[in-house]
Image 1 (cartoon, rainbow, N blue to C red):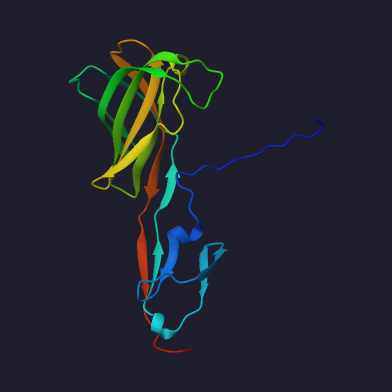
Image 2: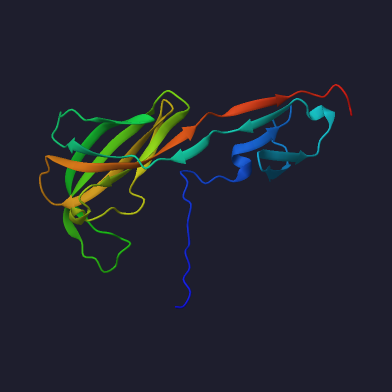
Amino acid sequence: MKDWFHTGINIYPYQFEKDSYVYILNGAGERMSTQYDSLENGGKFILEGTERDFPLTLHRTAYTGTDKETHDVEIPLTEGAELPRVKFHYGTVEFLSAAQEDTIYDNPYDEIEEPKEATKITVRYRTLPAKGIRKMYAVNLDYADEEQEFGRIPYDSSEEEKDGILVQEDIFYLPRGKWENITLTLKNPSYWVGGSYDVVIEKPRSKK
């Protein structure tokens, strides 16, 4: 090809529609239909209503971002072993449990791949945010030795929320055996920047 093209993709922790994280409520707590225009140093809302809609509340959630910070951590798989905590700049990853069991790895999304005898390793962990303007809330987890890993069945990772903290669960399939520990890579932590806020707009005193 005489010409070449470069395509970039921006990936964010959450993909929001604009009106899901910045919107205006009327005095009855109902979301109002608005038109939002971006400006060089902010944004502009255009909406239709009457004085009965006041007071208005402008809501904005916190911004979100990712970091390139990476840590390798060894997770013991023996029963009763103390599990590690890994400190990042904006939070700490706390491992809650790690277990293994014999299974058969059969990827339903690959018709060619044959089922394999495997060890299923389930790891549960949570992210505790640090104090400050940036608060880490999640992290990506990979098995460090990818050549030895059979893989993961897509959507085999789950999460739940407990006491306002996200608890994540990841499952890895390794060659069948009794594993004493595994090394995991924690990378690309996600964090909130600042915090959500509400701005209350009272009814103007003048109609001008």
